[in-house]
Length: 200
Image 1 (cartoon, rainbow, N blue to C red):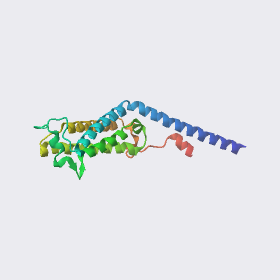
Image 2: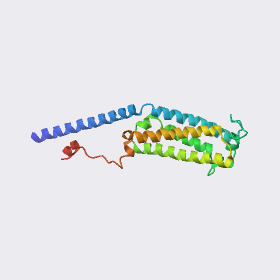
Image 3: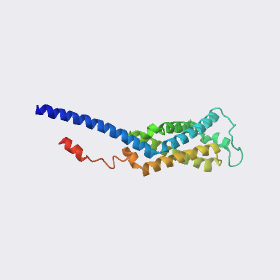
Image 4: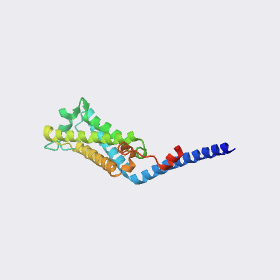
């Protein structure tokens, strides 16, 4: 009778702990959403804007269009930039690379992606935007020192990429509690006294 009572109590404790753990997970997700504020929506909006501009540039590139709403003389010359030898990278049109970048960032900037505790999504977001800003630096160097012309639409894409990078990097650095997966390796969690008591 005593053993049965202990088993019943133990099972009841496990059920309560399981429910409490589930509730704590939901509460943590809610707190993460509240602390994120409007950041996911802001990044999503910027990513969508970049996606639209990249679609336009991709269309112009693939159709060999010269109807870009941009001056075509002097330093500001979109056609000179988009039809130069640097308009492709490793055989892939730069406009298509930009389209792929913003499509990826649009998915990674969805509110659900920001709320998830999955470490790889947060790492992928930070890694993707870092690669994007490095490539933007390369393109700026090409425009200024190789083509000697600036594409207005490309500059819009560059600016949006830099904004995405700043928002993602700064938020990850200033709010590590919202991205525990990125800090677990450096600060492993210690077992709580309650867990130690249960193990005993």
